[in-house]
Image (cartoon, rainbow, N blue to C red):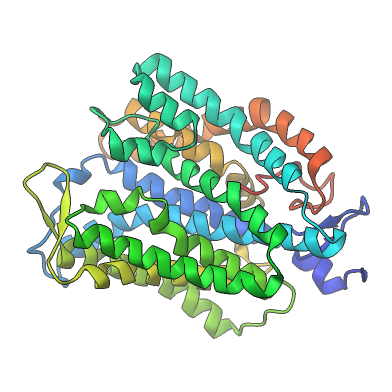
Length: 399
């Protein structure tokens, strides 16, 4: 394997660290990870979401843009999916190229050490303090929380709810390394394209058969395009070679949130209408395919964001504070509903107070619960996604 160029070493792509081990690290992606969380946080902190208008609101009104911006925060989860898929696929491909094979068992062990300690600890806390039904706890314990929520709707808003997205990721990553390990490289991109088609088709079928948007949102298949977009970027191997001019990077950075907000507004105010069931939305007949395509558009836009970041190493997204917030974003995501519920009657101050409490809980969790297990990952890691020690401690690799 050739040694890294100076550009690669400073840019955070595949390179040999000071400890002599190959590393693939782009600190700006930690900044993106934090903003993905922040979008979800702002959505959930706007606790009166069910009262937001649906339908009958003109696109040029402040109400349209305000509610669309708030609700667009839900797509932060799909940004997580794109980013996570890109990072994991990049690491596995580099392991395959460097070792000639993928150690699937080691990959699963890394996932266990990264996800399980906080995940199962939080599930246990929800079971004890929220008195969740045993079947719901079992669903989340088996990483099928999204299917459990679809099968048995929660009688109350539970702090465990956001963990559905962790279930989706774990379901996919149970299978994905096996495919990378056994399929020839030339088949992987067609597989990703097939996943995109499957996601679009799954959403169309659900909506065409009268399913509400929540049945799309919690369905694993319906998020396959976000995962596939991240994987396609990794398989393209653009990490160290991508060149984008400043106008293109700025256009992606500014245009991406606008596209996501507009797509959300079209869905919420144009294609969806309240049904007779409280809190459930139904698609306008005949527009199911358009609604499904809007989800794909958002996934592609997020792919563009990742490309812009890869071409913008050294930008403000690599600020140490943002990098740290990105590193603890798993804990931020897990704890934020608890914090929001603690201060939801504090009026406008609830945003700052809930964020501060979330940050405190996530920082403590990262320091005392997650990091000890992250250190154990070193034994099962072939390509590291952290900077060379002691520059930065263990990051949220493959999260």
